[in-house]
Length: 263
Image (cartoon, rainbow, N blue to C red; front, side, top):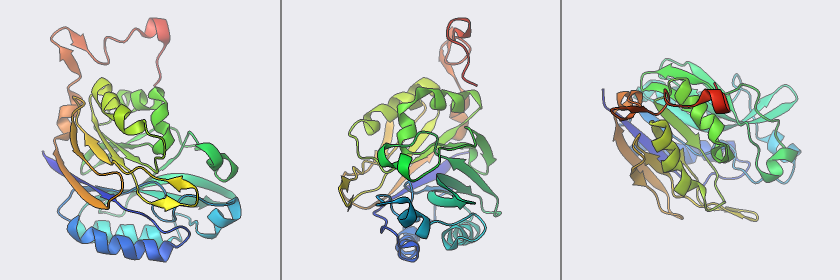
C-alpha cells in the first residue's frame, strides 16, 4: 500500500524545548496528510552545546519529556508515525537518540552509534544496536547523522528487512547528501534524511533534506537554507525486491565467505 512521507526541515532553538515544541506545532499544520513525519537530529533541543551540563539541562527521559508527550499527542491525533531526534537522559548518561512514535503510543528508540566531533565530550555512544521496527508504514529503521559514514549499519538495515530508513541529521559536512542515494540503491530501500538549517555558534547546517527511492533516485530534496515541509509518496513493498537483474540479487549474491556477514 502506498504511503506519504514528510520531512520537516527547520532550525531548532538551542536549549529551548518549549520553543521547539511551539515551532513544530506551527509547521506540523501542513504535514498531517502524511503517514510518516521525520524531523532532524536533536529536534527537541538544538545541537551545538558548549558543554555536557548545557546539554543535560535540556535533556529528557522517555517518561518525563514534554517533547515526547507532544509527539505522542500529535501522532495519536493525526494517525501518523513520527521519527525525531531527541536529547535523551538515561540515568547519568546522555544519548543522542532518535525516537519512533506510533499512533497507538508505542515508542521505539535508537541511540546514535557514531558520535561526531565534540559530541564525544557530551554524549555516550549508542548501546542499542541497529534494529528495524514493524509500524503502520512498514518496517522502519533509524540512523542518525554521522552514522551515514559507515556502510555497515546501512547494510544491517537491509539484512534485517528494513523498508524505510529514517535518518534525522544535523549535517555540516558537504558529502552526505550526495552519498545517501547510493546507500538507498545498493540496499534497495527508501532513505529519508531529515536535515536542519541555520547556524548555531560556529556551525552552519547544510539543509538539503532528501527522500530517496530503492533505485537510488532522489524523489524530493530541500534547499540549503530554507525551511521546508517536503512530501513524497512511497511504496514500502518495493524495498522487498532485491533483484538487480534476473540473475543478480543485492543480498543473496554477497560473498560472505570472503568478507563475512554484518548481521
